[in-house]
Image 1 (cartoon, rainbow, N blue to C red):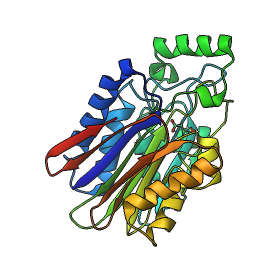
Image 2 (cartoon, rainbow, N blue to C red):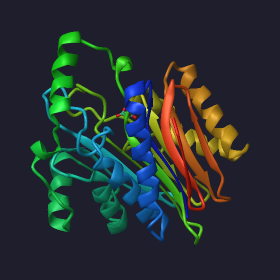
Image 3 (cartoon, rainbow, N blue to C red):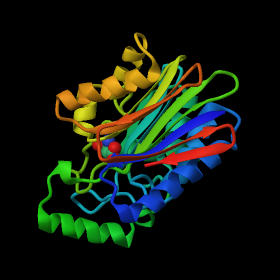
Image 4 (cartoon, rainbow, N blue to C red):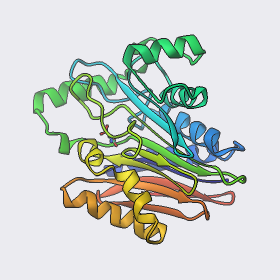
Length: 282
Ligand code: ASP
């Protein structure tokens, strides 16, 4: 199994470095316990959704109404399951995986997604269980300071895995941007923008969603990969994003087992394995 994860691309402050490194390392470790790529991506992302360091699942940023709205996608072999704007689902990536597996529709939002989770046995929770005191304070502070979206933090999480059978899966899970307009959905759950996977490559992206979705950043990596090495494709995709003054980062694996990553933010938290050894970087 090969797995790479990210825990957001932004100016991660020095005092948050250790938690981010620990979080991404733990995610790779948990992902490696699985046999197939889809389960590995789900497990790695579940680990980061449950870790309050990241803007996904528990501890996510609050929207302008002080509520949590989560988005997630998981993809494999040019197919995907996605959810957006859910407040009662502890692990949205698991709901996305259920939608992919059921293979009836691809994308369910809001109340309908929560009803679907209830019917299909994906655990629901009280929305308040996902809200942390830290985020309530941040929300009050942001309201006072009237911050612009580009000042925000981007601790979305993502994972890409390649298993022994040559299956590639990719996933992304987020609470979106702090103080977002209620109902706002960024790039993360959009196939081709925040995530992409076909039979030869898988990608997860993070960063300023409004720009990432305009260039379909993850799909851009896949298109460039047809013409160049994976590392170069990731780098070039970031120049496409930079050209419209967007910023963020991508992680990727190709069918040959190569890892790719690139970002144009001061830092990105990411980790990948070499056999049982885990490399964690920021
Ligand atoms: N891309 C996410 C969004 O715009 C944010 C992030 O990556 O942290 O919702």
